Image (cartoon, rainbow, N blue to C red):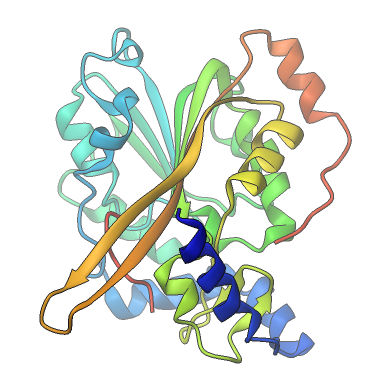
Length: 287
């Protein structure tokens, strides 16, 4: 990101000094799953498009990659109605997919889809901030975890425990593929006063949360707390151009890959280490 852009973005954000009252803050944080369930009740399967772009960004998802040599196991957290898993299952005939979401309604849509095959996938309801994934998935058994536009829906104070939850089911050498909203994204800059809960955390009109990540925050969560190895951690900038209005603007996403240590003792040691000191309308483009 250019220094001029960052400076202008910081200036815009600095003007918003008001925060949501404490009562409503607690309500939005505690009712995250409830508000997403309402979202899927309103929009059913029609809001998000299937994510055919994911294997362009993450080579691990391509058929023939090293992870595809011996029936890989993938977990998608925050699966929604299946927009990620259907293209993956179609392209990778040998892959097995676990898919979870904290919205029972969303999981119901996945299970009711004509492409859902219990021999190749298992969709289940799970609040990854508190429900143990290892109660459903064997520990250290998953090759790839996709965390695509899901951590932004979680309160920052619950993100570190979520990482620890994921690490428990990740194989030695397994990878987490991460993509989410980045700091100074157009959507963040467009929030009007009265939507901010804390730095980089906002609430949308429908009550769902939206957190905007820095690469430093990702390193703090996945490396310092999770004990993982950072393979990639950067921003993806997509420029939107409105030729009619002669306006261009930036969508900014944080994209990263983290790998579990080959030594399982190193993973367990990291998970039992010191706790991390916590910090913190959807616009569609490659989401």
